[in-house]
Length: 251
Image (tube, rainbow, N blue to C red; front, side, top):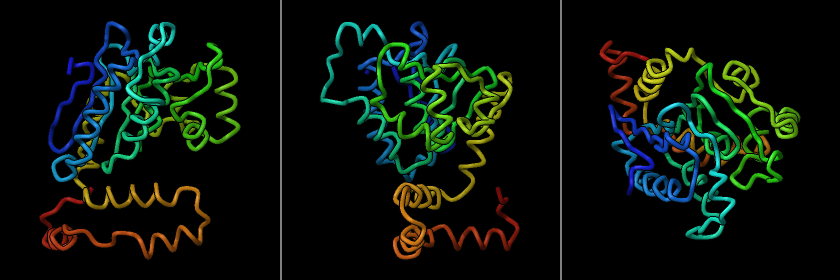
């Protein structure tokens, strides 16, 4: 690897940092190759990694798909390679936080949308600019954006290509949490600690339930929850005993 995606582990979380700050973390094929390697490893590390955080180095999350790569013709390891890597990230067993500061445009927005939580700085700038370049999404935006903000808001954002700041992103549901830029790292750390304090078994099982029942009629979804959910985790008894003994702080 050439450190285009850095990994840092701390207290049960793994932070993946897009690391092309001189190019505003523009997404080229080499970035996706490194991202895929990290994702494949993380999928096997559920006992040691309970949370994955995706963010960008330097001034922003990412300015988007590297237009230079597009213009010269990308050499992909396989057809639709980037979309497959994004799906593998979305389907990690662990919860994923997309931590967005600065630019998050088009392909970068498609990448950020895989997050179970999108955590934004007030100075974040989200936009889908496919229509500026006579492009259409192939990395999941047409499916994930309306699921977050509603179909007609998604149409408005896709048709206008306008930029949405962090506070508006939170208001319309594009981001789940928006914090002042100066508090970004501190509040992100606090969110990670709050999630990691809860049962990692439950996080994985609940994420699987939500993914597996997405789009089902409610009766089918309820049946899936009852008969195919994973039920009690191996840490249940210890957590209940700790609560009863007042030795476990509840998050």
